[in-house]
Image 1: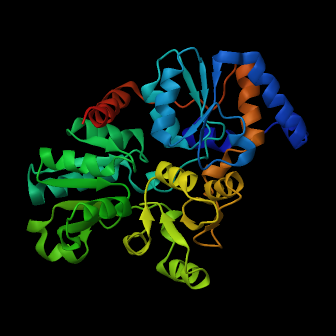
Image 2 (image 1 turned 180 degrees about the vertical axis):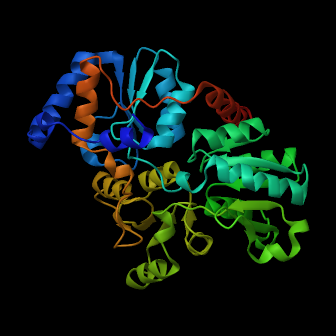
Length: 368
């Protein structure tokens, strides 16, 4: 069966699942978890639906969950409630005895899909010709295993939204320039926070295979090469959203993720990783008002968790991450039923050679 055929059939739920009510499915998930015990571990990303996150053994961001999964050594099965690149990272960090399962293989990441290894290898040849051996690649963990492996192979590393600044500083201690992929916004916002001028950042367009932006006129002074990728959710927040919130409530605090565009981050009051957003709201005083620029499932969950704080989405018309939402209760149950029958489905397994080089990039981040 081809990869496309596998993905096409990987979400086709059997009638035995479709005929169940939500309550029946929830009860069955609880039953299977009880039967499997420590043999099963379910990590759930912060952006998952409530119907799924309620069964998570741990919640967190993608890398945090991958590390926790690796520490759950008794677990034979890691049923990762997230998206494909997260399951790949979990497979890289867990042992060969553990199987990582993604309940629906269609659960991808638009940002990760904006950088594939063929585009990167093509770009690297142009970048090397232009700048010589002065560039080190850094990739956000929101990227494919192949992109991570490329960074590992070329002396680079991975990073998260929590440690982007120290990792960028580390990269500059290695080489004069940094290729930052796949999210141009996180790269631009982090570099600007470090005092790097916007005119010293050039954008690489992987579709047209050319440099773009104002800095293209003086490439020789460029310090950061930003891959032209973005998060389809966070790019939808605008300065107009901020202005509308402040007009309605002058006392509101604007809190956004650094995957948002530069103009949004600079107009916001606070910018930070998903974990920083959660901690900021947790520590905020009752009665305070917040407009949060991040994924809607998390915003709604924070609103429910802190009813004495006035929390809204920065964009009232924002939809949840569509690919993240492919992991739903029926698919979770389906994957667990298959595990219980010792016939697991939707196993995510990274090629050993790719996993080895990707691990080098991840470990450089851990030790930097």
